[in-house]
Image (cartoon, rainbow, N blue to C red; front, side, top):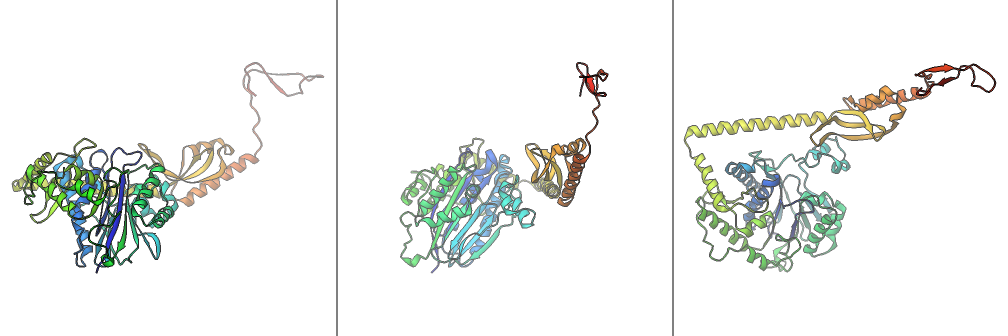
Length: 513
């Protein structure tokens, strides 16, 4: 019998970003959200490549092997990102999150890496079913940070796991659940949950039976609240195909922004946009590396997509519509669609240029053994250096997080977590808590110590230092004031009726009291 998805999706560039690094795919058996990173050059390339690589899984015949199939395909997508960087070093450092749902018989396979999220709304309630692979989430898991502090943490966007050219075999979380018909799942990039609270997301998911209205409402809420990042939302509702729902999409099922977030298009319109252009050549055998083959592969991909109901949004939609989708093939049986960007922020590389770059990469692989050995040694050396840098960075972060100091906060004594230093624009500390001890109540020498930051190896030691400062302030308040020591030329007056009392100092002009 099995299950399938009704779906809706939308992606928007947001209020701050100049281009959309998010990509998403929604179909009857597959839903994927990917949030690319890499800045000006490669974020959209990474997300679009990963999503396009997974689209071939949108079919019902996985025979109970969906978990293995989905995990393997995500690893293949990661290898393609590595090969793209070899072909074009400008893409070095690009990466992407991936959160995907795959219908497999009566089960759903959930695969996840990064901080894009999956939420589930079922009879048992609403909950987040993925765990963010971020630095602050690790601090929360270790009990070193409270969940309510995560959104304001200065390093909340530091990712611990992504697809990209930094890890040959990244760790992907995979889970298998048995859903009930009617329940809803939401996949989203962090642009949504960064500004919209979970209880609001739940209320919107419950508000209507129109999935398109749900995704539109969630995106509009994000935009209204500033949308500092791209926002991409996919909503699927589980159903059993024998409910009378034919293989073709239902009304309202294949709507969304492709890529214009303000528009909604039917499945027929989407098919027209993704079908090969008139006169496009037929698909050539995989593994052929020439411009004509690259163009044929792009056309074959578009034909493949147009043959089934689906929705593609964000950078991946832009790639399929322009037709600039070069192919990286691992074998004659498997097609891996991937993308390469030029330095322009808005246009993808011409497939002829990419095919030429891939030819050069393959020629390097087929070079004599000596060149291969040197290349392998160079790659090994770079990988070793990278691992050392990552390890060093982790040690530094762990040490910084264990440090405290006592400093000043708006005229009061405060305790900070971290060290009193900055790394460029990034502060290496954050306010732990302020106290009611005023700086002006401290002796002068104590004020100077606090302004220069008093280091502490633990929170307990920082509390002890604050206690000592309180004692100093109390002693300062209880001690008699110092006898004035005037400077300048001073003369004393002789006591007489109506004059200053004996011993009272007077000053000449310029004297100090």
